[in-house]
Image 1 (cartoon, rainbow, N blue to C red):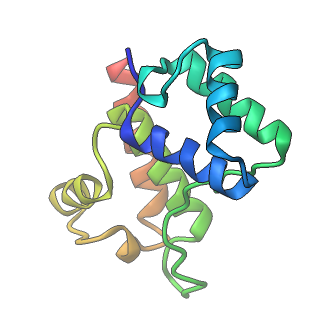
Image 2: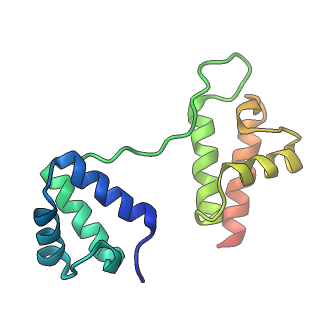
Amino acid sequence: MTITRNQIALLHVAKGKLGLKDAEYRAALVHICGVTSSTELDQYGFEALLGFFEHLGFKPLSSRGSDYGARPGMASYAQLELIRALWREYTEGRAGEDELNKWLERCWKVSSLRFVRAETAPKVITALKSMKARAA
């Protein structure tokens, strides 16, 4: 199975950040993965090539959700990130923050993750853990 467009884009960002010429990039594709184009890569080839780029000094940014700052009475950043992570695991990455917000609205009467109160966050986390356990 080939890799996603986002993964291909990440490889091209790494190529640019490392200052690799096209010939060097293509040589890495051939020598490390045995392919001539990033569109031919599978998941193992992608991970191998990204590992090589990281060895050369590329540091990919980790995706983080919005940090709404310290707000009295509202869920902490750590709680919000845990909710996002549990949601990604529960949906296996198929549903994003919009779907999470719809679920929060339906089940908790909160229109967005940023409006989750400190006393509600542990309940949301427990619910997501239970949903994930039932799905497994």
